[in-house]
Image 1: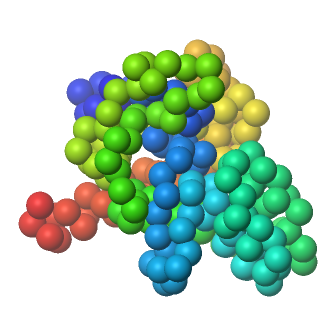
Image 2: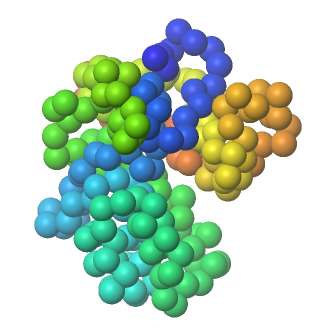
Length: 198
């Protein structure tokens, strides 16, 4: 379990990981939009790609994202957004991902029965332990540890290396934007708890 007692980074990537899957953009956790209660996002990836389509006034793709179940398909839809402008996307992408994860960790429709990871088709559900408290508790309980998306295929949102190779390749890591935004979400959640006297 990723807790404050470990000093090293918390490596995550796939939503199916039995310990850290809940940190993945693809982790199944339906949550409500705070601006429009009629909108429900199945994953943080759904939020990201929906907001990307909205940013570029592509209503058709935005609606398709909300109707689509599979996050891989949603990611593909995000690559097809019409009127795309790279400069505008670079300006807004981190804010969008941060807000989506704040909503994921605070506005889940229910967390009853949630596991630390979303069991994959070939995995036994028994490999996945229940979350401790809430998703927000799980994130906050990582303490001040560095959160690192160890995707060997993504050096922008991740580091471009799998967890097993990450420590040795530290000097060659990618940007880890998702990890950085999750750490910012964690900071915001901790701050809210202090403000609320929790």
